[in-house]
Length: 297
Image (cartoon, rainbow, N blue to C red; front, side, top):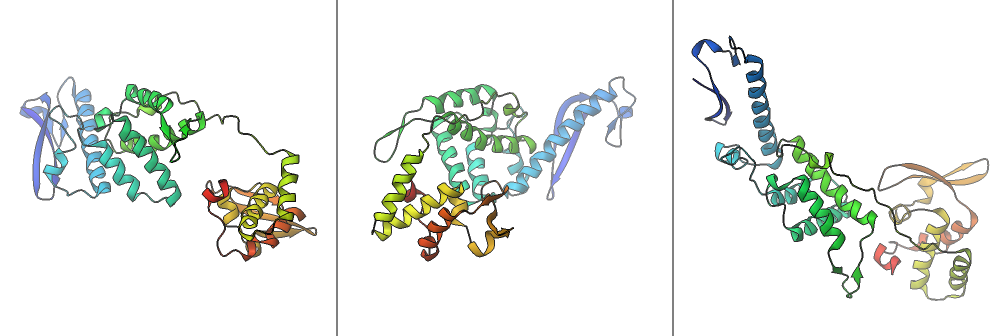
């Protein structure tokens, strides 16, 4: 007798054979009994049940029709998952709750994966392919809109893997892939390349330029940039800074009491006279601070 397990989707019912043959006295209440390999067979059956239950969960997460036909799209004739991985990943990017800036970063990773072209199905999400993807993002020649070559730093490469890994891990938890290949991938954490820092003399020159300038538009960007320099705040944190909400006074000294927009980490930093000067000068009068791209330019 073939030992089947079934799942019901709506009013539909179908069966899968897992290759275990028993007689009528060796099957009771969904368990193998009176058999020398009962423990082994029951474990195999439970693994298959868990796999199918994870697929049903994945169907619910993806908003699929709960039908046997849709269920079978997650499986091929040999029991592997031939569903389009990139389509699933795009759906998850659009439906996940995240900041829009973060979503753009995930879409950038998605587009790089499309150019790589080897992650077509869930069965393609393997350790060798991840190592090939790592080589691809290191060697791919890309250019800015002005034609300037883009050289990806180790930190940038790490970020591509970090974003992609979150979807691979989710697929693994949902049972869409048999194992998480990132558990065995050796990702060298991003080491920032040599990024030049402003010297004291350069900062003094920026302050001098600001004091001598009468260009209101340019001064707005300079004030914002100098405010970041003297507080150490990232762009998103400086943009959301509110004097009435984020300033506390301790023993007569003002401090910025805030949290990182990106990580949620809390921080407290002294609010010295120099950053106060640039804050009071222009930023409070700006309805909207300069964008990150214009500030960087």
